[in-house]
Amino acid sequence: MKKIIVLFAFVIAVSLSCHAAGKSAGTLRAGAAAVDITPKTFPLHMPGLFSIRLAESAHDRLHSRALVLDDGVTALALVVVDNIGVAQETSDEAKALASKQCGIPVEKILVASTHTHTAPESNRKTGPEPAIEYRKVLVAGIAESIVRAHAALRPASVGAAAKPLPEEVSCRRWFLKPGKMPLNPFGKLDKVKMNPPSDPNVLDRPAGPTDTDITILSVQDAKSGKPLALLANYSLHYVSHVPEKMLSADYFGEFARLMQARVGDDKFVAIMSNGTSGDINNRDFTGKRPARQLFEQIQIVAKKAADTAWRAQESIPSHRRDARLGMIQRDVTLKRRRPTPEQIKRAETILAIKDEAERKKLPNLAEEYARRTLWMARLSETVTVPVQALRIGDLAVCAIPFEAFAEIGLDIKKRSPFPRTMVIGIANAPSGYLPTPEQHKLGGYETWLGTSRVQEDASVILVNHFLEMLGELKKAAAKQNAAE
Image (cartoon, rainbow, N blue to C red; front, side, top):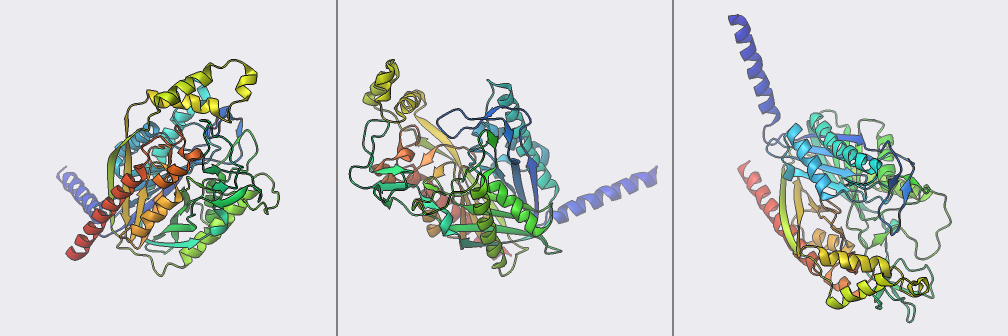
């Protein structure tokens, strides 16, 4: 019996020693996993447009893809989900479940959405049974992807790079030629229009810049040098050329499939995240693009993105095994936009119209935005959103809970104290569109009350928070380097 006790104590000691060694500072470990979250029951509504769209099957698979990193001091998880925008309640539930199972603190978990417009709702608790059931699938799938990635941790090295892919991103907000602007839903004239017709007699000039870079984080096995995972980021809203009544992961999923095929390892996990694409899409406003079959445009964009990410990966001089990690989360309280008494009265008047002929005289989407106006009037005066900043070696990552305009991401990248910065949008709490104050003055769909839901200077407030957090991470990095 005494020998058994001694042997047991020895095993425990060795186990603890190995665990401590694996957790020593400066020893980077990484793990990645992709979990299928394709629904099994249909029909399911696909939100994102102004009408009910019921999916009856899946064209391709939906996934939750997770990357877990651990430097012995900090463990963090980055998750990207094939969804238009995972609700904060759903995301928080999945984070708590994963944290309980693998120990990563919830504030060290980032859950972003690809923003595919062909995925189910994320937070239905009442209503159609398939939608209620899918919420459970989503929570479990997100948590499982984190837990599986954590279980796959192994010594790793990382590197970051960026390469441009300019031809697949277009600003979708345009100034029009005189007399071509229609009334907006509020009966007013905007200065710019989203997705105008591709007609040179109508179009004047785009209203904003594009972020053309695909930024990547490459993760390799430290011993073999084989690729483990790749996190990419591109400021392209979505493509969405898929058959009707079918779910799809859009170009995000096709990119992941192509990259895995190129690496030739089914355990390799490629992840495409959405950047700051609130005013960006894949439309050819010149009208020169030839007609294409369904899904063809997704394949074209995914292949170009994979080519660009591959070139970026090959440009990395060396991957670092000693990359240190850091992550900060802040909860930022913003004011909600409030409708004026005149707007409320107009909305009530519009919704009271019964005569079909009179309703047809209303501006396009007038009834929809009348409902949104009254909805905004019922909401609380403020909303608190989570923002996150991460350090992965020399790469900074900012997670913004909005569909932010491209110029916001460009501004953060330009002013970041890190040599390379990635900005992931629609992260942790999909909170609507985030234009700049200057873009608010121009009007257009992304600025309308009910589409943009927080104070008009919210982008300035959030950028300042990000720069402060990045500054804190930079100072912490300097202290770590000095101590080592």
